[in-house]
Length: 172
Ligand code: IMP
Ligand code: MG
Image (cartoon, rainbow, N blue to C red; front, side, top):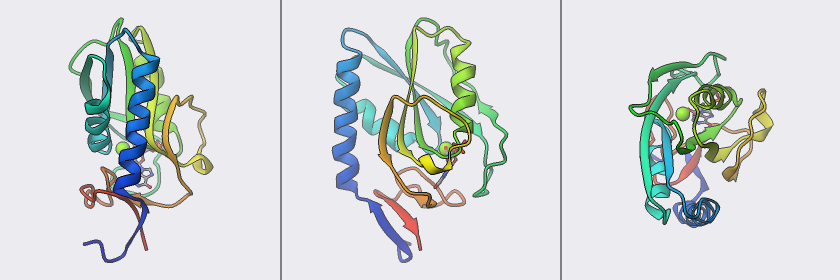
């Protein structure tokens, strides 16, 4: 399965960085509760690993949006496939994403969720491809900046497969 995949970020590197992010979030939100919004499906592994390491009261909700289908190229459109179950009003919300590419998905989500009156709203992404940005988004927490390559693993898929790789890799 992993024959033609090169490791870009190892399992160990991911663990170390998630510990750092969780520490930073725990410090920034000291005395508060945080409401994590996991963007399905890509950020499930990241959201769960991060949530376990945050030493504050944490609640979680899940949202599914589609901007890509199974294509590698963004359609530019974002559609809500599954909305949140609970209200985010007056909550300290952190959107958890797997990767920011064009920035369209997060720009859309940021605007949508801002309109629902959270106490605060920030974004945390595991990966960022800054070279690909077409829409400006303010991202507070970034795990790793990566080059403009199509990556898989640790939640990220290629045609719905390879999400379960414990590392982030590049198809070669
Ligand atoms: P954006 O709206 O262009 O920022 O797209 C973000 C979404 O595109 C992510 O949540 C992923 O689902 C998908 N995506 C972008 N780049 C990659 C990649 O390198 N591998 C897998 N999925 C990707
Ligand atoms: Mg995604």
